[in-house]
Image 1: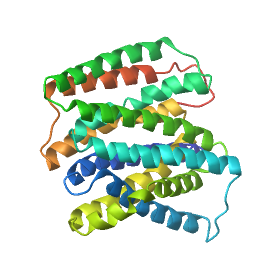
Image 2: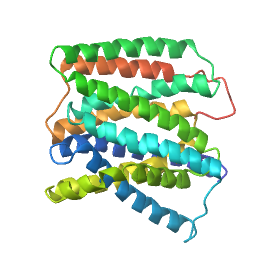
Image 3: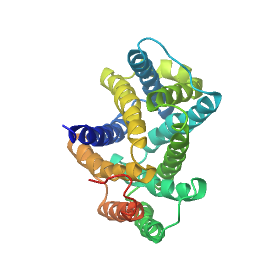
Length: 304
């Protein structure tokens, strides 16, 4: 009986990470699939509208009909990471889907955990370990191979550049979220961030209304699913995990996303990254994995 509670406390954050990885992987495929019918702005706005509505319902349910706003500092931080991660990242992410396959986008975007590691050194005063340096070198070699695939015409260089910008926005949002979670709970932070991201995308409202009239029902339903699953539930689960594990450990879990994306994309869209792109992506993710390895030096937080 005494071992059940600690085991449950460890199992729930792990389950949250697994569910998030699966939902986020599906969003890469759906964004690529939707690219032929919806432009990046309307797709992002539809997704965030569905996400904001879902999060509002969740918050009212969890808080039993009462919503209490956090401090001004918390609101400011959540709004900032909402605009960066929910609005700008989603917009750029959608744009990348118009140029390259879902698997390649996933491999490039998953440079973000490495960027988070560097950001943690700069902003959180964490030590710059040899593993982080080695991981950076290895990942840069992998990105070089992916770029070569682009220069040979196997991939669109514009798409690779856009995906790299998305990775920077992803990392920036994750770092700001970590600070925001010091001032408020994961669900409130995700709700406020999604609301801020939705407001930031309102300039696309007119285009969204126009495009929805000619968009097929499955694509619209896909956008709504991305708002409910990968955005609302996924970011809520992610924030919950961030409160139970170190930033780097949670970020490293996204290394599984590209593999899942490649499988999903191959089965549903018939798209697989070119061999040179897969090799470069594997090397890139290996570098990220190396950078995220930590010595088991602190016995405070049990690892198993």
